[in-house]
Figure 1 (spheres, one colour):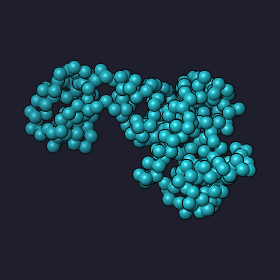
Figure 2 (figure 1 turned 90 degrees about the vertical axis):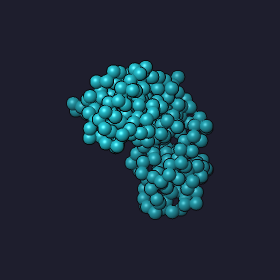
Figure 3 (figure 1 turned 60 degrees about the vertical axis):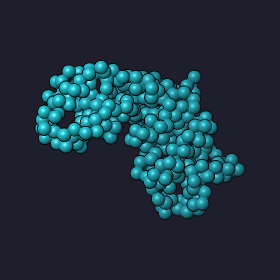
Figure 4 (figure 1 turned 180 degrees about the vertical axis):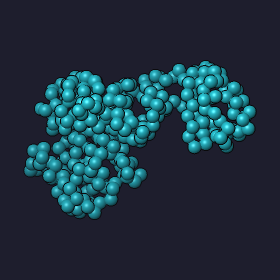
Amino acid sequence: MYMIETKDLVKKFDNTVAVDGVSLKIQEGDIFGLLGPNGAGKSTTINMICDLLTPTSGEILIQGNKIGTMKNTIGYIPQSLAVYNEFTAYENLRFFGQIYNVRGKELNKNINDALEFTGLTEVRNKKAKTFSGGMLRRLNIACALVHRPQIVIMDEPTVGIDPQSRNHIMNAIRKMNEENVTVVYTSHYMEEIEILCNNISIIDGGKVIANGTKEELRNLITDKDTLSISVDNLYHIDVEELKKIKGVADVRVEDMNLEITSQKNSYNLNELLRYILDKGVRASNIGYKEVTLETVFLSLTGKKLRD
């Protein structure tokens, strides 16, 4: 039995198909990364799992049960802040705890634990409108945790915050996971997914295009090597000519850097350098890139994560 399972999930808005047959299987204790460019269908999928949107078709099971009976199992941390500015941190937590029917001594204990967990105990009686961006993000998290959910869904929880708050949130996620809380995590910061998540799904165009561990996803593109070359002048470089060199599958230009992806074992380094040098262009910082999660993402989607 999975903590979260979606089966052929579809969501249409008029004639637009936002989610197109998404099937996910999320194990208990996972930190599960959901990756995709803007408009890929991530947030729509999350909103359906949280029962905030009704699927056009398909099925969602939480611990083997239909979603409507399992709402209290989930804590949702939306990308947009969902706190009340005129309430204190304590009042926000009390309000959200009561929504989940937590009362009395249990509620007070949960509030204190959530404040301590997010590093907000000392500002418990200050109004949210006085908080920094990082503190508001942490309060957002505390509100989702006050009813002690078994599943926490985090949609871009570190957007626009300072490094100290980001580190605090990352450490909090690890601590939650150590306590066997299942975490579903989306982020525009690829390094966060790479550091935190043990299983990942990549969504593009409303469809799941890849599933697996980081190692399994890297293995999807191990038939290619990416060569990085810094150059002093791009004016004389013709990308289409580079693509005609034996084995070259793709060429990307970023600032004054060429990233040339070739089929593995093409042995075309000399030919690539000869082309560049023959154009009177100086080359430096030449080396093959490690296959990272970002490399996989670009290879599968052809897009940057923020596209």
